[in-house]
Image 1 (cartoon, helix red, strand yellow):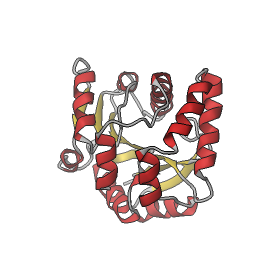
Image 2 (cartoon, rainbow, N blue to C red; image 1 turned 90 degrees about the vertical axis):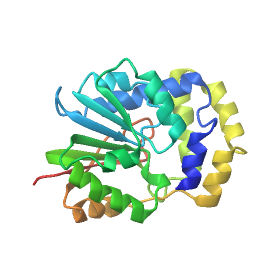
Image 3 (tube, rainbow, N blue to C red; image 1 turned 120 degrees about the horizontal axis):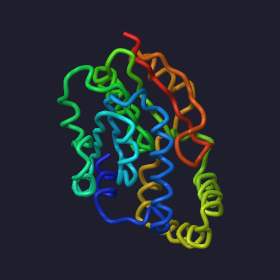
Image 4 (cartoon, rainbow, N blue to C red; image 1 turned 180 degrees about the vertical axis):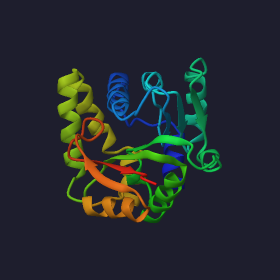
Length: 231
């Protein structure tokens, strides 16, 4: 995972332009807001990335912890949300040090593909501890084995056509083909899962698991799951 952290910690062109980035994060925040159980909820967004629209998500809950492994990302998050008192920015190790039952909702969106299976299992066990009874874990944007990079590109082009940045998306995809992201993805691969694997992972951690639809974000060929702590 260190190679991926280094990638996200530096400058990259994963988004084709600023409009793509804004549209992406606005849609993510809108979708995630629907999972917040109430206005006093304590929420963790693990591996949140730039989280441009998280002020909207924070407005739906009592406390929002944004956690990312990349130090440069955390620094930008702290600056961006310095005036939003309900948002805290934490490193993953700071989250690990929190007491049992600290959260009512834990979000892991578009992160699992960059983790090994063993690491994801360790994190799910930790999140079970951090969830309050009745709390939920949302793991979203899981890539099934049959969904290729071409399918991801098609989903992006569909979004770009709808949001009016199609030309930039075409140019951006061509640029991405020779980018550090593509090279790193080719070297390391992305971790993919069958639906049954994620359900088993959540249940083995003691969570009541189910798949939910739609997926968070624009790519509906990927999957989302809820794991609920019932005791």
